[in-house]
Amino acid sequence: MAAPAPAGLADGGTHWARGWRRAQGASIRMASLLLVAGTSLAGIQPAQATPPYRMPVVELEAGGQRIDAELARTEPERERGLMHRTVMPENHGMLFVFEQPAQYCFWMRNTLIPLTVAFLDEDGKVADLADMQPRDERSHCPSRPVRHALEMNQGWFDAHGVKVGDVVKGLETVPNGEPKP
Image (cartoon, rainbow, N blue to C red; front, side):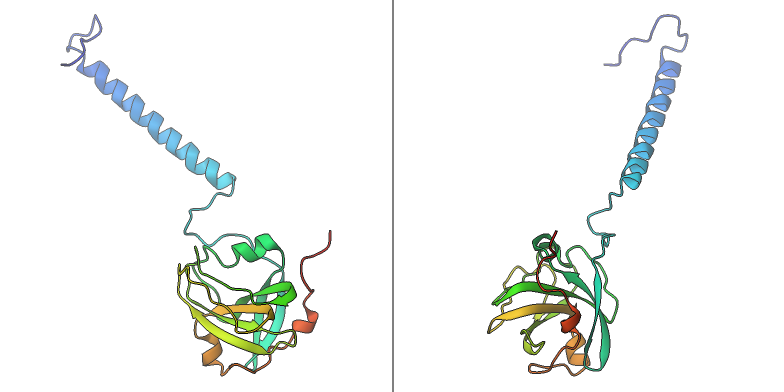
């Protein structure tokens, strides 16, 4: 049952209700606009967007190609890795740097692009290559201890003739392990 119209409205309240709905709609539109503007000003991005963060970049070489590799040297950087990225440029990658050689395993939780990881020993020699599918939570581990892992777009190493036993050049310029405060 409809609520009674306020006294003094000749049309039985429809004019009052229509005005109220119009004001309510304007309030909802204004609140939505403020929410969008506020999240934009705060730098909040939708979950699927490529995040604005970038880590320091080092220049490497493999298969005769220059690689611009973002450095993931701290535990939070290594955990975040390439999560939520929707694209990665052709000769761009991420180099994971560890303080000690070990058998570090990788997975693809929240990673949206297919990747190939090259596990590299202390001399930059490719110990293993593993193709990894988006959002796959299976572990991909090297067969022996490594000091670095280089993630590139899936198929990049194959397309440039990089195979197990080849050397990735430029690692001597990479700081070892976590930066000191």
